[in-house]
Amino acid sequence: MGARHTDDKGGMADKHDGSVSGSAPQTRAVRPLVVTCVALLYILLWSSAFIATRVGVQHSPPLSLLCIRFLIAAGLLAALACLRGLPAPRGRQAWLRLALFGLLNSGLYLGFSYEATRQMSAGMGSIIAALNPLLLTLMAPRLLGERLRPGKVLGLVLGFGGVVFVMGARLGGGGKVDTAGGMALAVVGVICLVCGTIVYKRWSPREHPLVINAVQLSAAGLALLPALLVEHPERVHLDAPLLWSAVYLVFAISIGASLLWFWLLERGEASVVSAYYFLTPIFGLGLAALLLGEPFGLRDGIGLLAVAAGIALINRVSSR
Image 1 (tube, rainbow, N blue to C red):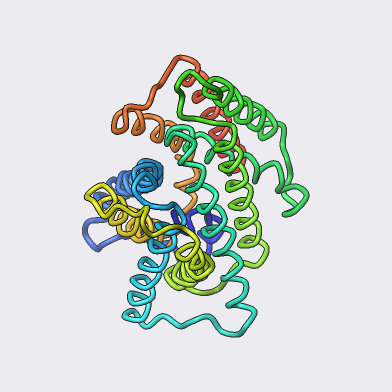
Image 2 (image 1 turned 60 degrees about the vertical axis):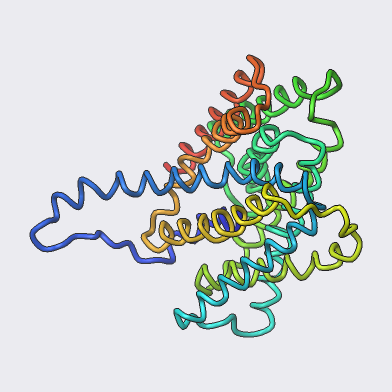
């Protein structure tokens, strides 16, 4: 869950048609399928992050786990960038903008989200995360000068309505995991993520995505360092669930999902991800029910369909 919503940068990379002498017809037939599979794998990995986070915070203070995840992933990405000979950001402004992006996109967004998972199910987390494109679409006309078309308005109504519908069904007692406090923290986190996206779009960095992600994760990790002093170390249980959660979050999400994103970005296919974004809450709720045994009722399904339809409609209008 790094710099995943930077689809406006897709135009930076040259599109490679992948054609090879004597085999162009086969390449054209296979390439769209490969891109689709990579995009779906990326969305699946992103959705699964809610599961790993839910497991991890049951065995460790959330911000400490997040801080360590960021610093390890940042170090590995920085080493990879160095091996590739990629240049570092030039000038103080470039560093400050990437640091601000990192604080909003990773530090604050995931900081609030990790705290929320102690009072909220993984499935509900994936639903609230779907507010990201909805809020961005709502704020874009004023902050980014983008036009709000009737189709987008309908998508916003469907999407927000679906989220509120599911939240209302899961809120309250009856032994349910989800609480109003957890949902509120998650929503604040998504607002920070939207602000990070706006910062990225207003001041699009010129650095390579590997460098961008390494710097923004470093800034987020350093900002969370005080958590290691404030949160009680005796609450950390170094057992198999925590280790598997940390390994998965670092290598599969912060690094693996980022590399898949870079693969799409370098081929000019970043816009493909947004076309499948509506699957995120579907995958999230499905994985939570399958792997964690979280409940999934009829009302969840109805709200989920509304959210998916709203995001799909917004993506469809935006791609025209």
